[in-house]
Image (tube, rainbow, N blue to C red; front, side, top):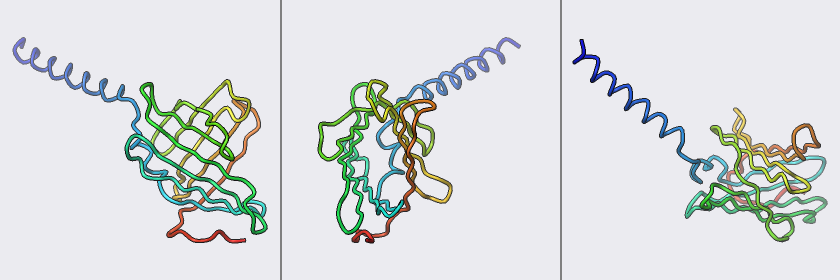
Length: 162
């Protein structure tokens, strides 16, 4: 009995150790590949477009723009980069200095970045819905003001509708 039990115990320990090691692996930029592409949507007469590059070289780059009445009304440079201490989302609205938001949750095709010291937003969310749409939201923290957007993936670059 001891001979059979001992190898079984070693196998259980190895399997448990392997599972534990996998669970501790930090998220990688490639885990966000589901965000890549050009996404478009409209809300209250504003045509929105956000384009994310593939997660190569430890970084994803993006540009967001809003168009209303044939004019760009808002725009933002975005990036997600792998840093020594994890993934960081950097937002530069209208080219302002980048504000960092650290990854706090990543589960499948849902990610949350946070910066509790920032005035607004404090959290940034992205997720893919079952219908393939990309959603984004920002809020001022638990129970605070929240804004949300929904975009569908564009097949090819083109001008936004006016």
